[in-house]
Amino acid sequence: MNLAGYLCTNQRGGMDEADMSDQSELRKWAAEAAQQARIEKDANEARRLQSFAQYWTRLADTEEWQRDHEVA
Image 1 (tube, helix red, strand yellow):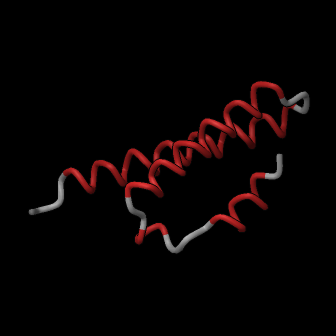
Image 2 (cartoon, helix red, strand yellow; image 1 turned 45 degrees about the vertical axis):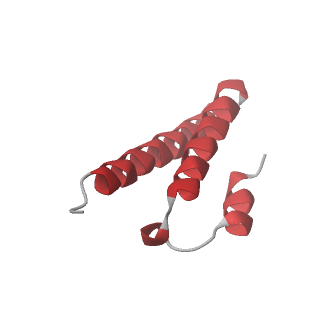
């Protein structure tokens, strides 16, 4: 699975424009990267994939926190 290619073809805009469906995509990408890291035989590639998964999870968490704490 080529995650970089997947991201390039599936981006819908900047991260500042993320809506609820984009947040779901971030979590989906994180889960896919983590799964790929678990089965990856190359240790360096597994670490890289796990790093993507952690980044996307933190980004989704941050966006949810910002959304939940916006002044209504």
